[in-house]
Amino acid sequence: MSLHATINVERNGFALSVDMTVFDGETVAVLGPNGAGKTTLLRALAGLVRITGHVELDGDVFDDSATDRHVPTEERQVGLVFQDHVLFPHMTVLQNVAFGLRRDGERIASAWLERAGLGDKINALPSQLSGGQAQRVALLRTLVTEPRLLLLDEPLSALDVSIRAEVRRDLARQLAAFKGIRILVTHDPLEAIALADRLVVLEGGKIVQSGSPIEVTAKPRSRFVADLAGVNLLRGRGRGDHIELDNGATIAAPGAGEDDVFAVIHPHAVALYRAKPEGTPRNVWPARVEDLDLHAERVRVRLGGPVPLVAEVTTSAVRDLHLEPGTDAWVAVKATEISVYPA
Image (tube, rainbow, N blue to C red; front, side, top):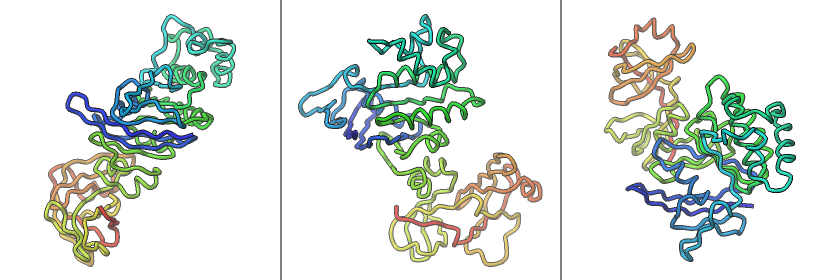
């Protein structure tokens, strides 16, 4: 089974243009900043938005603008789980899960609830459930109908941080057992990496990067992905063993070539000094501390200057260097610590 989708949507001045293929048993996470078109993509796949293009699931054509074909949502065998886990408040958990079933609905729903560890909640109302339990019930209500395509819109975003990790593990087990195609929308990189086989990064209505979590985070191609991976991303043009950055600054980087390139610098490779360092680093420039962000025993220091970067240092280094917003400092980065690849 496979899903092939060429989707073009224009709404209120926003244009979504996506071409994607997803294979049976694959979980794809669609990531992107707010307004990138993630939810619009999900709604288009579900048949809730009319498109220009073509959507086909295992040979069944759901949408084809060339022939004016559009299969209604209820006829697509698509399961859609929204972020707010909407359950019918006047129905019990059992009745909610059995809602989409016709024959032997409550018997089948009861078996699913028992397997999910919710057998003791069968007669409870949604108002009596925790956030995590409500999420699991909403997912089960979709899974019992045995959809061929499962679409999840920010499935964990409404949950408290204290229970999110536990529910994420449970969701991973449920997705692994699901036999069809899984597509989830999320803004949480941890959620995407934990649940997905492949990431699709959407920005401005277009796919800017796609691949396994390792592939995408190893070679980010946008600021959003670089922030997701926690690295500094620079762009410029290779000049042999140097890169002329888009802002006019120049950094030394072996093997830069002569084409447009990206350069990645890990924050831990950025050394900070109060005075200009002596020695061999080929990349040294002045900077000013703009912000400090504490992460356990490490501090991420945002720096302005000729080459804006984020450095990661220990809390003791911050104290020893007397770093605070507005502090002048010097940056040193070894050329060998810079990863360069084609833009």
